[in-house]
Length: 119
Image: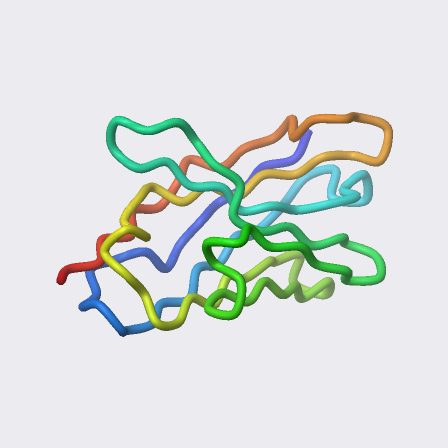
C-alpha cells in the first residue's frame, strides 16, 4: 500500500499563493503517476493536475493551467502543487492520489487539505 499525507492548505486572499505538499510512504516504488484533485462544497471531485513519477511529464486541467504548477522530489517521495493567482472558485478540499502503471484508476488517496480563497 501507499500512504499519502497532504499539507499546506489554508486561508488566502484572492490573488495570493499557496503551496501544497503530498508526502508518500509505503510501496512508493509502485507509483507511476501522482495527481491532485479537488472537491468544492456541493460539487463533484475534479481533476487538477498530474505528474509522472519517472520522467516528470505533467498535465493540467484547463481551469488551473498557467496558474498552478505540479512538481516532485523523488528523493523525498513528495509531490507539490504551487498555486498562484488564486481565485475564490479555487476554494475546495485538495486531495493527492497515486496510481500504478498497471491500474487505470487512482487507487490510493490522501485525507485532503482545505484551501479557502477569500474575495
